[in-house]
Image 1 (tube, one colour):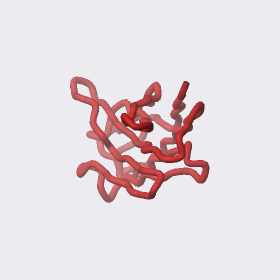
Image 2: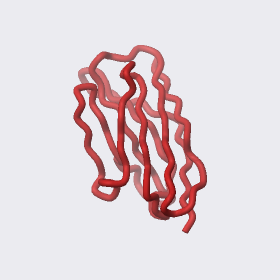
Image 3: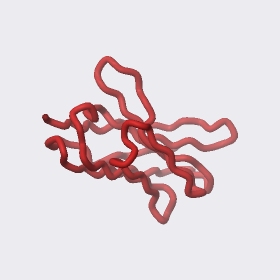
Image 4: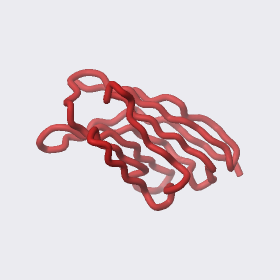
Length: 117
């Protein structure tokens, strides 16, 4: 079993910063992708940023230059530094782990990020 535990969400004013953390436990493969998705009310879940164990990172266009994804040394943690937050960043943020031949998805429980104007 794989579990993902997120932390770091909260309420922040526009222009502020937050840092999200996610730790994976259980059977974690040495090669995997970890990332962050978000879902705002009435909208589909969307990719925010993803990072592979080989060092590749990709971002949604809407967050490029503002958000930075990074991995911990143990490779079972992922962080999302969010700067210059905007009201449209308000959403539930979910940690994601993809691993295995079929890139099976594991999800965290989600953490609320609310940006006030």
